Length: 139
Image 1 (cartoon, rainbow, N blue to C red):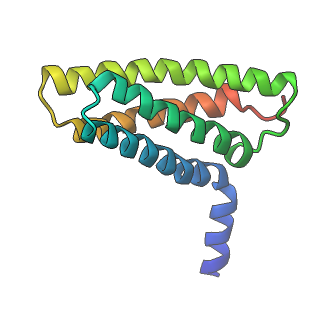
Image 2 (image 1 turned 135 degrees about the horizontal axis):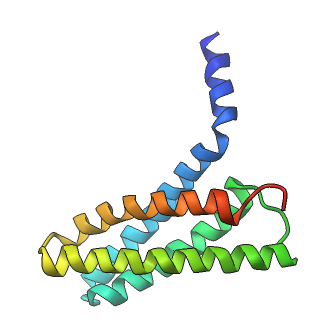
């Protein structure tokens, strides 16, 4: 009885659960690369951009293929998805970078702690936009 309820919940919330799993993966990549850049003494903004690139690549592939199960990689819809995904992620990169500069350079919050906090905000924005505007069903 409990097992069937859990299974039904997992089936119903599959997309959200997968987005969470791969979001954690993308966030881990983002934070790890950002931290590595810090160890290598790469300045804040370049560190953020480099980390974003790796997280972006992982996120697009997993969101398209697994989370939102958007098929086709060579048609106009795929190009539109990529362009939309890129545009939104560039917007959240700017949001991420501005918030990081405020927290790290103005408020003197630790770089790594700031990155974690900012990532939570970015994840929420990215999910809403991805679900409702980029990988819509029936396109």
